[in-house]
Length: 152
Image 1 (cartoon, rainbow, N blue to C red):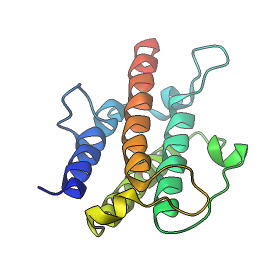
Image 2: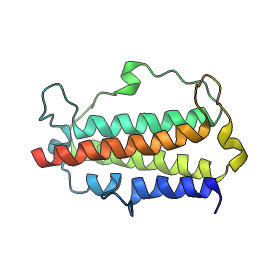
Image 3: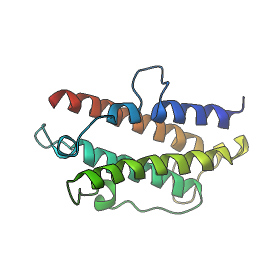
């Protein structure tokens, strides 16, 4: 198995299921209703919905970086606002997160191990570090979502 294949496997496990630690991103999001997703039960904390939008941003940022773009992440992109609290918007947010994950995964699978040590333009860390960072970021926020679910 190549290193790219190992990284892709970890990306899939963290996001889609089969992770050693417990529920994946998609598993922890299952069954959350739009009103629950929009609720912010912790003072000064983010809602599940905001976290989903934020996760999508950072999957996209990593994808853009490894594709060669220099990426700026202003606050409104880092933590996008929830626009409308309804079922279709919540479904769309989750679908867009999954699409972003799949696009990054497909890009990773087209890469070679030799590219992992490259530092993308405007970045300080290698592609290897950024891909592992994206996995860790998803798992970190999946844990937050799991805790927020308990507040429902």
